[in-house]
Image 1: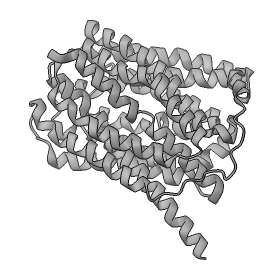
Image 2 (image 1 turned 120 degrees about the vertical axis):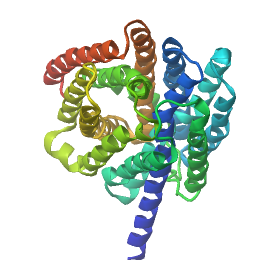
Image 3 (image 1 turned 135 degrees about the vertical axis):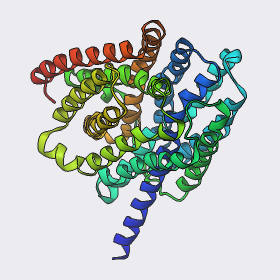
Image 4 (image 1 turned 90 degrees about the vertical axis):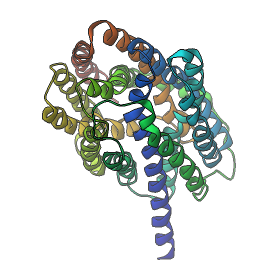
Length: 392
């Protein structure tokens, strides 16, 4: 009985770490682009600036993942990443479009410590579940709750007026750094499931990533990042253009993450019944619908309604992707496998932000979302055919 209680307590601690990490991510993702735009950063510059984290994501997750696997511990790496990123983030307060090169440099350094922390927490959570048992979806759903909670608070903190200065977004800085510091402290209380005897690292086993099924899967990850990176980068700027007030900019994401929580909570059972590949195909269909609707300048009510599709575009996709990479990767390389998704996604996000920035600067946000929608439709057709030929 005592062992069961201890296991539940540790699981709750992992859920809390997910909560805190995603709470910081939500504030940055929702208000970061609006802040930089109000600092005078143009659409084209914004595309370049947000391609920097994607470029960093090409190598930083592998650096941290391989380091974690080689050391056979997650705690030290996760604590360092959270704490250092918390100290770096306030530097953005002193930068604007006049110091764009320095802004990109700080973004790269910050992203090196920020971007791979969640994949490593996923790997750490999977370590816990493989030793003690449990449901990944239930623990990960608290990350979604963490993403939603600061956005609910922001409805009462930020101004209900249209537009505003960059300075009114100061609470974002307090929230991002504050949550990261608390997460670093929280991580110190979690157990590391280190192997008492270090296994020989046989890197040759990673050739499994070159199988046809694996390559198709990584193509999915690439395209999803290619379309979602500019979607995230410009969505709240698009809302700003439509006249949505600062305190309401978090509402679409509250709805989206609420739908995501429900999907993730049942994801294990749904994936067992229908399969991870089916979940990915459905996610791509939902992405296409989401982008095409946005391309037609929808009303505020419709924008809120289509956010429910996040249940599929993330709530179904993410657990399916985690399961696929976890099944194809040997246990000794689990962190490396999880962070490899970030590497492939980083390449897709880098290209997506550059291309998306050019589309937005040249043709506006409606053309941007139309092009993203057509890209997803074409990809979905290719994936249906490819997955029917090459099965896991």
